[in-house]
Length: 368
Ligand SMILES: NC(=O)c1ccc[n+]([C@@H]2O[C@H](COP(=O)([O-])OP(=O)(O)OC[C@H]3O[C@@H](n4cnc5c(N)ncnc54)[C@H](O)[C@@H]3O)[C@@H](O)[C@H]2O)c1
Image 1 (cartoon, rainbow, N blue to C red):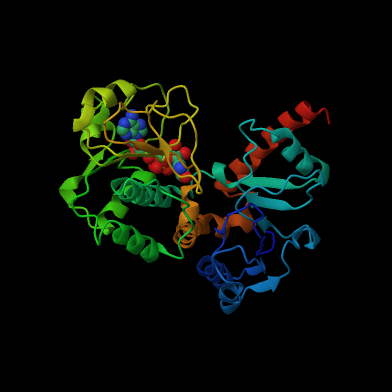
Image 2: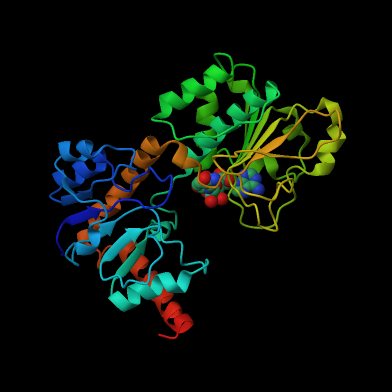
C-alpha cells in the first residue's frame, strides 16, 4: 500500500472556481489518516482558511511541480499547455482520451516524465456509471439561467453576463427576485428528468416556486412516441437534459415553432445536454454554444411572433461552484479512500489500464 496523501493543486483555467477536494472531503480524508496539502488559490470558491481549519497543510500557489513525485496531485481541469514532462501521478479531467485537439501532446508529457494520469471522467463503478459527475448542478444552474432569460425577455431585454453565485440560496433568491418574488405561474418541461441534470433542473424549478403540476417531467417513456412534440411549445421554459446515445427524431424544429405562430408560449430553451455540433442534436434550432457573457442566442421567428432564445452553455456547474464541488467531491471520496490500494482497487486499476492504452496510442501518434 502506498502512502496516504493528496496534494490539491490550484486551478489555472479562467473562471474555474470549483475544487476537486473541498474542506469537507479533505476533513474526511484527514480523519482516515491522509495528509492533505492544499495550494493557496484565490480563484477557488473555498477560502484557504477553510482548508487550514480542518487540518490541511497550505502550500504555495502552483507549487506542485516541486512536490515529491510519490505524492499524487489532484485537480479538476486540464493543466495549462506546456511541453514539460510530467513525473507525478495526476488525478483530474484531462480531456485527451477522445482525440480532442492536442490529445497526444498532453499524453506525451506523461510518457516523457514517466507520470500517470487517472482521468476522473473515466472512473466508473461496477455498473459502468461514473463515480463522480457534475450533472445535478448543471441542470440546476441551467434551469436558473433559463428562468433569468425568461424574466429578461418578458421585459423586452436580453439576458446579460452570468456570474458564479456564492451559494445555492443566493442563486434562488436572485431568480425569484427577477421573476417578481416567485416563479409561480411559470410552466416548464424537463426532458431527461430522471437523470442527474434533469433532477437538478426539476429541483431548481421547485425551489423558485413553480407549482408541481407546472413542472412536466419527461424521460424515455414520454418521448417513446417520437418527436417533434407540440407540448414543448406550450411551456415557458424547455430544459433538455437527455444523454444522447443514438439518432432520435428532433424534439422541436423551426417548422413546429413557425406553425405555432403567435400562440406559442415557449420563450426559452435550455440545452443542458449541449449536443450542439452532434449531427443527431434533437434541438436543431441553434448551432453555437453560448457563454456566461452572452448566455442566449436568438432563434429566428416570423415578424410579430413572440421571441425565442436558446441557452447552450457547456460548463453550467461553474455557476454554482460551492455546491457543485461539494457534491462532486463527496461522490469521489469513496474512491479516493481506496487510492492507496489502487493496484487492487477495480476503479483505479481500470482507469490506469485505460491510461496505458491511450498512452500507447499517443506514443505512436507522436512518433516517440
Ligand atoms: N451543459 C453542461 O454544463 C453539462 C454538465 C454536465 C453534463 N452535461 C450533459 O448533460 C447530459 C446528461 O447528463 P446526465 O449526467 O444527466 O446523464 P444521465 O445519464 O444521468 O441522465 C440522462 C437521462 O436522459 C434520459 N434520456 C436519454 N435519452 C432520452 C430520450 N430520447 N428521451 C427522453 N429521455 C432520455 C435517460 O433515461 C436519463 O434519465 C450529458 O450529455 C452530459 O454530457 C452538460
